[in-house]
Image 1 (cartoon, rainbow, N blue to C red):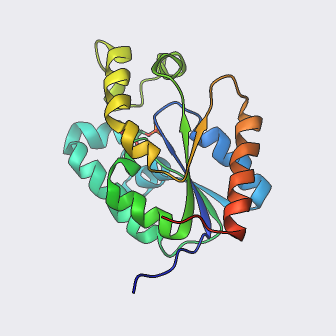
Image 2 (cartoon, rainbow, N blue to C red):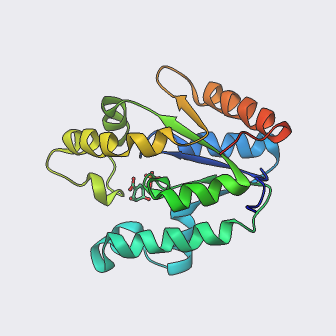
Length: 181
Ligand code: S3P
């Protein structure tokens, strides 16, 4: 028999630039949970920046770090986990996260993502001659995976505070009555 779902953490998923970290920090404060960002954790543990991991070892090596971290997360409780935009695209990662957390996915249009990320350089996948085109293609290819999360939260025209309140509401409801996988 499979183990029952036990929601002890809150995971934020979604594309680059949708506001996972800002929302996550706010939600963590409200819940008095510890805030963890998977990219930051990978960087601090390896001592290598994400851009450099991609450049020196390739994307598959980065995905392996993410998968290893996901396995470790199964032992966590009382944490808000902000995930790198590609982490839940791997169905095994998403299934594992759902066992111990509510997975809320933040959503924004490609245009909004582009506006929010266009002056930043720390995301290797967006260092492209046509960043908006790349965002459109990547987001479309990930749409199905993002929709498999527990909650899909539209961030368009909403403040960080409003989004955080919405996520919190869903989390509190889920803790009382866990949604089915
Ligand atoms: C990635 C998103 C990034 C980071 C890496 C790959 C992705 O995290 O994990 O550059 O595949 O979408 P953010 O979503 O926090 O930018």
